[in-house]
Image (cartoon, rainbow over all chains, first blue to last red; front, side, top):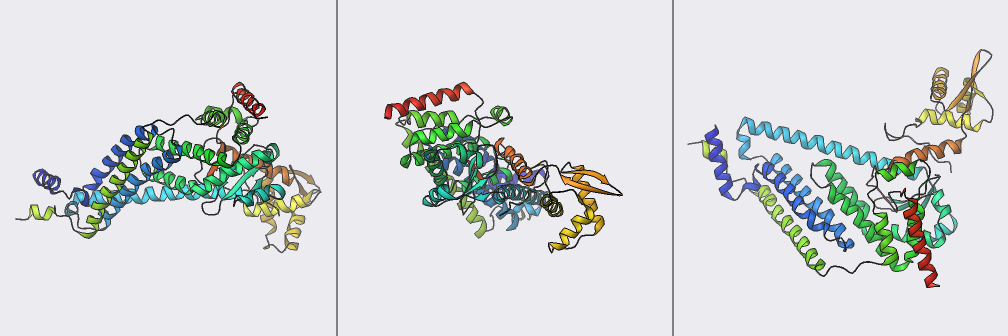
Length: 323
Length: 140
């Protein structure tokens, strides 16, 4: 049996069809893991280019995750894989199928739970009236007021964006600050940040990818990008002032949150008050390299997936074991 | 429009009301005085709600009293109940309880916060405020 496996493995490795067979189950996760590890430090260096850093960080999670899931599903459900000629191979396939099912159910359950939490906040709020309503209409948003003493301003709604503002925030922010805050949220809505963020979060719940740092990078970059878009039309001071007012918090919450702080507020405030540092000359080059690397990964991953859908793997165990 | 009472999956919000508890609490809140089980049953009937058995209403009221949402006292052979907090205070507290975990870095991918962390450093904030004031005064 060991001899047969050795012959099979040698033939698979030499056939060039390795990714279109069940070998993908071993190879693709390792490749995805390595890709993410390889891209992460390079994406981190795109710090001065937040409008690209965010999408690239998200793509660096989504592309390997989508390829990994796609290849696993194709290989498990299309049949004809050489490994399925063995009892052990069938056992592995069943175990992987069960794992995918459990992971998918868990990720879906978490997503539904979080979606319900967000919807619940909306259902507890009241539509804004007066000046705030008029302001939001200009930006194509709807604002709802949440009766709450903590200063809070957030965007929710994947396809119909709603700004949730606590009554405390609506009271403490001046008109200019409210405008700047709404511009910031409308930038998120325009860029589809909630849709991308939800997909990234789903992928991380679904797969054990070492991508939490990329997720953090994406979350931070999208805030910088939305700030930059907001200050194109509103005053940077007004947005900085709104950030300061909202980051004060109230009561017992302050200490608890400060412990978990990832500290993006200070760099954001610095950028708003002192302007953006001059971008590194090599940043355009880095960005091009990252985008190209992701494109190559996508095409390189899609080819074996398409091959797997269209053809039966040539490295068939039955060819090797039968006389 | 009256906001709905929160109810979430276990662990998300420490205290929440179920659908029947919400209906019963609505009756209690609408009454300014102490109410008995019979009063609540009658009020629910008047509102055209699906009829609830007397014992069901009694159980719900007792549960609410155990959860410290209602005060209970004996009035003759029966017990009477009254809300501990008025509706607005109760809802405000519930919303605060719900927003708190969302602010405490339990990131919800369906929300983006303008500020999702709080600064517990008054000196740092004061410094930024000073810079902001300086910049504004220069503009003038």
